[in-house]
Length: 130
Image 1 (cartoon, rainbow, N blue to C red):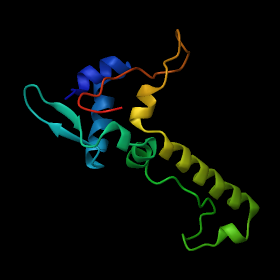
Image 2: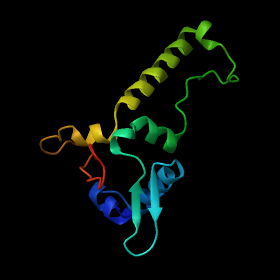
Image 3: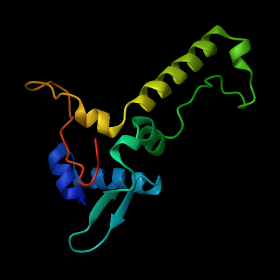
């Protein structure tokens, strides 16, 4: 278990923000909340079974592919080059996010030294297998 305060400290974020994110992930079935003394959040799936796509779509919703404002039944792929490109972008984004799991991210080498703008920190996932 990890509590939001500890996670917020490790990531350099506010506890309120981390708590909101963790509640979204709990609603999406990726983590479970345990209240009380010694409580916190625990992962419900192995780190190798949680992709960035899972996290993005739980927190942001489905990645859109239809930018024309018409109903979802619109056959844009057959009629408009711009919208075809947007569908391709969406599909490529979904594939890339789907390939990256939490385990893969944690197993990747850390940057040597400080990288401006990079907030990635190693967070030990108790009970998970990389």
